[in-house]
Length: 562
Image (cartoon, rainbow, N blue to C red; front, side, top):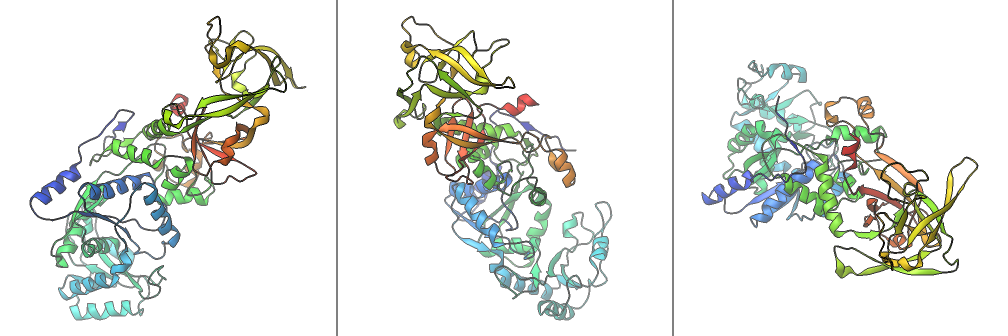
């Protein structure tokens, strides 16, 4: 079993071996320029692992002044949809990259088909009429060589005739396939006469019903790269064993300057799922609200949660590029998000679980404008005004009638400061019939505005607040990690997904109180709610209900729960 490396908050950035290979190729004159591509299949939404591949593909082209194309691998029409094409484009643009051209593997179907004919003419491909189970059994195992198909040595003319029947729609699905003739005794199972074309009678989202035979990925991919002029085909490590087949296809089809395939380790982040199939189960079974649920590790989910694209790119850059299997700590991603938002997010005051406070000795009809920094890290943004009044809201947790230990917030024995305003002291409180505290009465020191007093006394507790009559109501969604086990991918089945869900991954708070000016925010706008964390306005917000998502806390609270 491979050893897993858990990467925490330390900065880990291995050397980029991909660029070393490219430097070597350019120096030897194998290629004059660098061209890469990002080739997703449009059968789902992109996730954090794709974000790494995007950064590598586009970032490499940028470094060498080359090109990076977006190419959709649309060779399986039964699983593909225009919805996914549009979503992938949006995700790439959000990450800050721009493709040079958009292509589809279907653009090359005629060329790929001609290459298949060329292999047949060279005696390097044959039609196999064995059943799928028979082909699977003939393939052999890692310790036993495969067995040649009884159709392997059929005449070239017969293979061409049958392939034409497949192409003309005269053959039913599963009855015939076109296989490459390579080596059934190869130690690499991918080289044991792989299937390169199959019958698939489905309407394609771009070519319609023109084709009823479609190339397999391992055949279409290298030929698409070659047709497009790709010099370096960068892909994740699971394709390393496919590289001999990639090279064989290019050589057998007589590609003059073949691309070079280079593999890198895919991104594995704990407490997340990135398998499209498993993510789809989460969506279909209602365990999440959709592909863009802010708890999902999809790019659209991270965007909706308020993760800045630059923070995601910083995370990928911190991890670096290597071939070693590793598991990245989710806390490192959150740390990158937190660092970026701490520097760039505007500040605002919001009370998530409001408790009313009445300042008894403050004039009832008086209000004051209090200036606070928009962003203390960006003084050029200046200040904004919040209004202070006799009645305010504070957090329920910021008052305790009988505190234990080191409690520095409002209580009968301690004076506290209201952010930007005055020092206040507890006077009394009101309770309902069940003994719940409904209101706290305080007195304030008129000489303490801004935290300065004539006698120079200081307090340890500073509380945020909003004015009762000058705030807005909001719904706040508190998000945390979706799973409470490090590797939910090890668990099979939807029931185990449900068993391993973090019960605190979503908490919805209603009747929260926020700065009144936040109602003018746009979906995606992100703020630091003082003492609470970072939040962004959700797309579900309406004029009747303002909804904010918690992007990340001020600290890594999940680790403490563990």
